[in-house]
Amino acid sequence: MELFLGHRIRVRNQQLALQRAADDMKTRWDENGISDEAIVILDFNMKLEPLYFREKTVDHYGKRGMS
Image 1: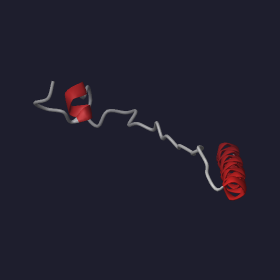
Image 2 (image 1 turned 30 degrees about the horizontal axis):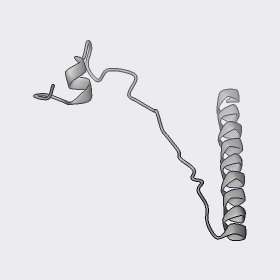
Image 3 (image 1 turned 180 degrees about the vertical axis):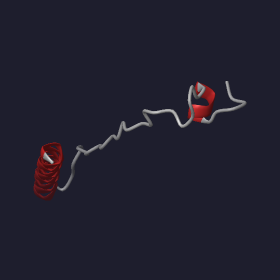
Image 4 (image 1 turned 90 degrees about the vertical axis):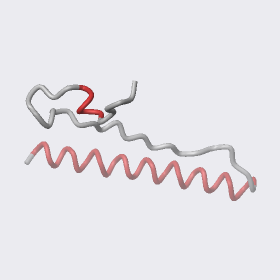
């Protein structure tokens, strides 16, 4: 339960930080009428466990026939 609550707190903190950054960007855009800023969100989550025992890399990425 403690791990879950820690996760929820981190998620909420991240959401608040992103919202603050977006609000700051919008304020600067409203003042200047132009902006050269952007928020980019990257998700690096990947499948960590193979679907099958000793799954080949080719099967993992699904790139058969491609080199």
